[in-house]
Length: 197
Ligand SMILES: [Zn+2]
Image (tube, rainbow, N blue to C red):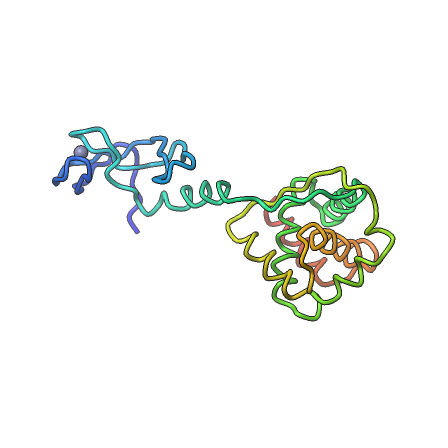
């Protein structure tokens, strides 16, 4: 894969000019074709003739994808305050900060969605006293696959309500990391936290 720098040039078919033109690589804010958002400061080939974006180099696709991820519809739920405390405590236990909470949730949802046995245990956790409480905090999870995996986990766990499912996942995290301090996945998560700094 060739890496381009700002100022490099390349021949390209410009869709605006509808002809072969020279494009110069520059950092530009690029709107998505569906108008749902904008990718800021991404390296693109700009047509020297019409000043429109003519090329999106391979190296810029992760940036575009990252922006697309955040543009996806998040999974929203309202949970009792003590559940957010559980997530904060679990994150600290793993060596992370509250910034790690969304990643921790996504890790668990992904893992549970692939494990029928573990998924089935969520329901019993929802019967515990910790599952109760006024839902006055908001938890928002964004990501490319999160909605899909939440839907899959709902089927696996036989839970139809998103908020109940999210609560169940939090109680599973509580059980694994804070109560039983299970070596797995605690150790895997600790090394993950350490690796992302
Ligand atoms: Zn052009």
